Image (cartoon, rainbow, N blue to C red; front, side, top):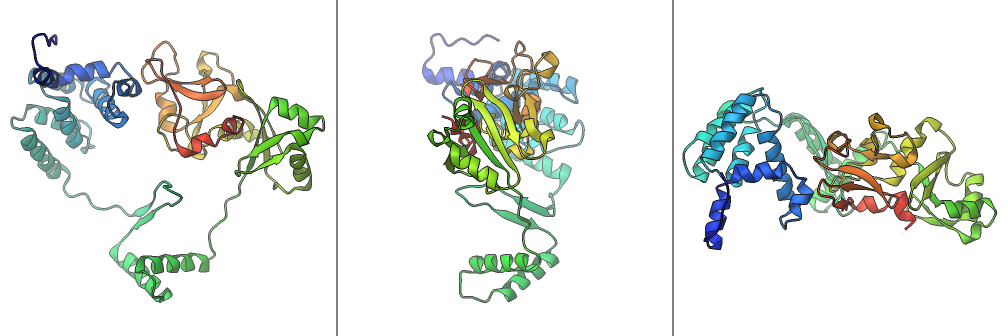
Length: 370
């Protein structure tokens, strides 16, 4: 039904908009969450709306039930917030068709928001029961130079390990600190930690490369991936002496075209992947924190549409964003990666150019040239 606010005060207009949850989500389904966020709402909220729109209007395992439920939600004039709550419960059911059955049930359920919310929580509990904790090791992302590791296992094994740590460290430190020291003593006493083999990646511009090649290296300051700099002359001397290690990679970058070539000591078959990794240390999609080592090589101009497998046409994208990237620039849905002034950026369906704001995204090779 059409939405008209003529003659209404602002609260009446708000109530009217709130009753058009399906209509609003239908409009959001045609836009990128980044374009939606430009209206002044939080990006996290825009992403929630976009995800819900995908659920309501995207492919489903119960298309008829999906269609009928959406129609009923529109008829009942349910708000976006109400539909988010419904989906919060339904998505917990993993069995095929179960989620849409619960969505349909909750959309039809009469009651206040709080009553439907409580009913949904109980229905999920009835269906799946109390979810048991799953054993495993979980490692959190780095925050402020610190990372967290958590271990879940049987009470017997964890208790035995706790007693071992208590027996290892008997200092008067705060218990959490003492247990940490004991933990590392246990790790180091059983062979220690395997030290990863690091690659040194050097970012150097075409003009500077020409100077170094001609023997004018003192005029050039080169950035290295270990966070240091050196003159071009020092670089040549260090490389010849082996001071930079056995796995040395020198990436050649153009300030606007991007990566041009890679000169390496070993592993020529990894050449293009390493170039792309040196340029983007994390997935360049905005707000993504997946490190490049866990990403996939992505053709900026899709290979199936004629894109070449050359350094300037490659970047690293995590598995998810590699899948949702709009390879066809005509069919715009989620946005696509594009090289802009040498750097890889997301261009949204609305035409906004966005980069990743993750700390490591500003430490790639192209940023060292800025």
